[in-house]
Length: 160
Image (cartoon, rainbow, N blue to C red):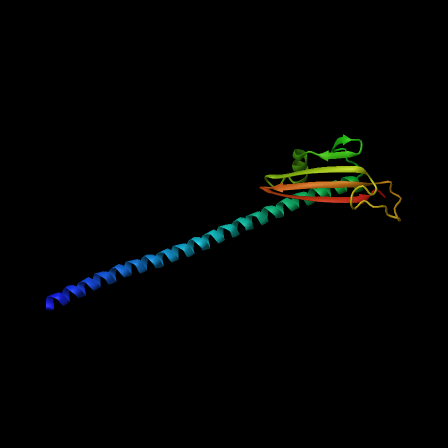
């Protein structure tokens, strides 16, 4: 009789060990799933941070191109370094823009397009202004790119 009870107790111990293995596997699976979730969220956040940095550089490039163009148009009144597309349209090529405006930022790309004789009321921002006797407006668009991020600025002002 004693022999039978020892055999039964040994069988129950073996069953308990099987449960322990299953419980350990369940805990390890939960820990792995949590680690994978945290790492995927972290990787997305790192990607967002990198894109924010690229965005800031692209905005800087577009802003620098706009400042350069405004200076050439309003202060120097000379767009001779630009390519004439039509009688009233100018552009600065991507290569010329990058070498002239932002040579210190590697991999930066920019472009400038200027229309100096936009008819009043044809685009938003070019209304008839009572205090200004302008016959037309100037419309400038600058684009900056860094990495995979693109940013652009647009400005319209009457030719007073």
